[in-house]
Image (cartoon, rainbow, N blue to C red; front, side, top):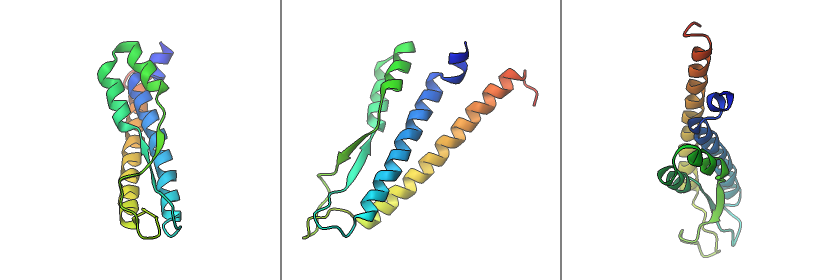
Length: 128
């Protein structure tokens, strides 16, 4: 019962999404730090499409197990055009991605806080 209260599918999805957002923040920071490094190739974090696939194909405990096993992965960006020095980092794209990731992270933290408030409310019988 305690496992279901504290580590249900919703909490697992939020937790894994927070992990991915944290990793994405580090990768974006690395991309920005290397904006002037000749030959540097930017990277991206792949996670959301894998999460969506896991949630669409699995049910019940299997869905929890699949989400729990998911890990965000760093992938090189081979599609962005490179400058003459071989670097393919665009500071405008990185700053946009950083802003989107920050908003996503903040929204996920709010969802986790709401989930915690629901659990506290259930434990306290609806009383504060």
